[in-house]
Image 1 (cartoon, rainbow, N blue to C red):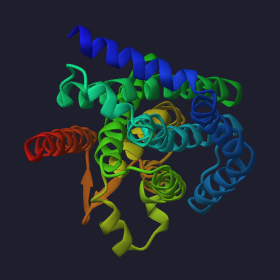
Image 2 (image 1 turned 180 degrees about the vertical axis):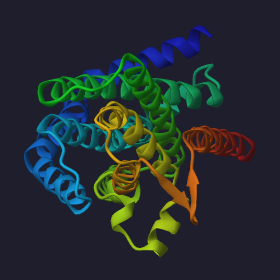
Image 3 (image 1 turned 180 degrees about the horizontal axis):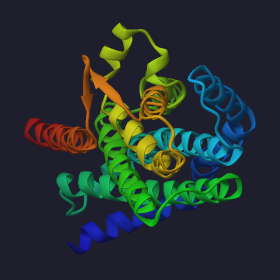
Length: 299
């Protein structure tokens, strides 16, 4: 246990000591927040106004701003929890490139202990970055239209923790096969550019064709984005209900922003979404353990 704690502390310290890696991981979510607020906010606002005007419903600017803020924050967290995990987990590959991994294995360190230390350290580092992003996002929402309850904030925190563990598990499996700096850069670029579309963070699934929506429903990230949408917009939806908006209009809004998602026509509940994420985390962690056990057996 002492060796494990030392390795976790070493990995976390190295991540924060590498100024380039740390600031890239930290600035990326904040830059995304600024870009979302600058460019996507108006798009979301116009889209929501158009949706409700077609239904013959008029909303106050405060409710619309709260809905826009909720969409922006959920998109930001959905992407950051995964992409930052890949960035934080680069240390595992860098140790292969530099030979540090071989040097540590020459000491009385079990490969399983080392593998677990990478996972835990990546989870801690990523969680710190994502909590900073969550705080910045909540401050942004507070300035434009706050409708969140204390429970909503707690559920958002739970969503972030689960998605960070998912991102760490997924990045651990993928990074297991990487051994060069070029491979690190390539995988990082692919994940950063593609994940937001696959998970429905950049564009709601409702804007895709039915066939593509059915395919994307097999991605666990889709369920994470939907949970974040629900918990970021719960307060806005409550306000809409208090303002006596028609139930049809509220359901139309929830469908449009992916609060309601459908697996081959069947609506997926929040409980099922949580179950999918937890099972996905268990699956990727199990695969990571299997890969490391298999390597040890081969050696």
